[in-house]
Image 1: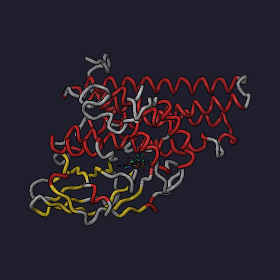
Image 2 (image 1 turned 90 degrees about the horizontal axis):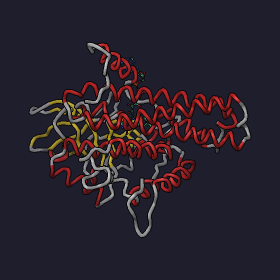
Image 3 (image 1 turned 90 degrees about the vertical axis):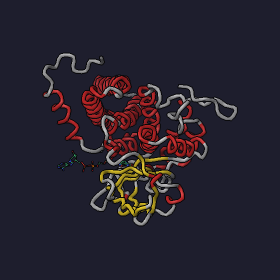
Image 4 (image 1 turned 180 degrees about the horizontal axis):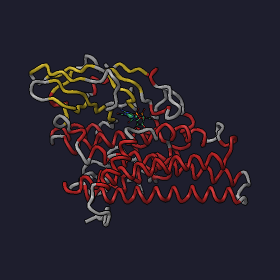
Length: 380
Ligand SMILES: Cc1cc2nc3c(=O)[nH]c(=O)nc-3n(C[C@H](O)[C@H](O)[C@H](O)COP(=O)(O)OP(=O)(O)OC[C@H]3O[C@@H](n4cnc5c(N)ncnc54)[C@H](O)[C@@H]3O)c2cc1C
């Protein structure tokens, strides 16, 4: 993919990703955030690429290309891929559920003001409640965990339990930029094995007041299917990027160590290669099927099962790729400053996504509920 020209130069996606990958080692620290990376991506027109009139507009069918882009960013640096996926997810939710006025407001925050979005839904026992104060005013109470980009995301989309006489449910809202400075960010929450630079801190929203126009969609829109579970193909694409990076690093490592003649090393590299290609075939096919099925209500269950399979296969591919690579490179390869040490930690951490067991059993449930397994994933 060629990114549109920027200030008198043409930047290829490859060049941009190389630059991001080269800087990954420098930001691999708790408390760090890929500040420069998002500036480069903004300069390269990647932050608004899914908005109306742009190359991968949500208004057209570009999911396979979007997944490929997410994979390439994830391959360059997994924390950058994670935060970028959150930004894209927020813009997609605005595309799906925002009024025209809201879309205009939030999309121009990206195109004109280069604002970074994110989606913060995960929470522990002290989760967010949205109290209706009347007259279109609401007050937030509680906190979120794993808020990627906290302290840097300028327009966070958060969810919470709406407590109102007019309606209840899981409500999305986007905090106004000026309120974001008031958030209490707890970076001490974030002591992870990997994904350090994703800055996935805990954030307390207690006392923040918002207005009706900041609420996105009706209660429970966030969990509307097939968008909610179907969206897993985006993080799966980012994860697969890291598996691709491991293949590249392992191949280079073995070549540099002159260990390419050994049959066991060849067998492991063969396996890593076809696992990564399996992942690519799944991600591509998931993108095609998403666009085909997402607007057909009677295909919702099929799409969810396919997305669940994609996510599960990619997790398995990544786990197997990591294990094969470990055996190939040995302990020397797993030492800093070798890139494999970091990518391994990042991928191990980022593979942990919500409800993997439920995802697997949902696939089985779908298949067992069909009258026959013939044509299970037919596209018509
Ligand atoms: C780097 C990173 C960045 C993230 N960024 C964001 C973000 O920006 N926004 C956001 O909203 N979230 C974010 N998350 C959170 C993420 O989406 C998941 O919610 C989280 O990683 C899941 O954590 P877990 O594996 O501990 O989940 P758990 O739900 O604790 O799952 C662990 C295991 O327990 C099983 N399990 C789950 N429930 C039960 C049960 N009731 N009984 C028995 N077993 C159960 C699961 O199937 C799984 O096998 C991020 C996570 C990471 C790692």
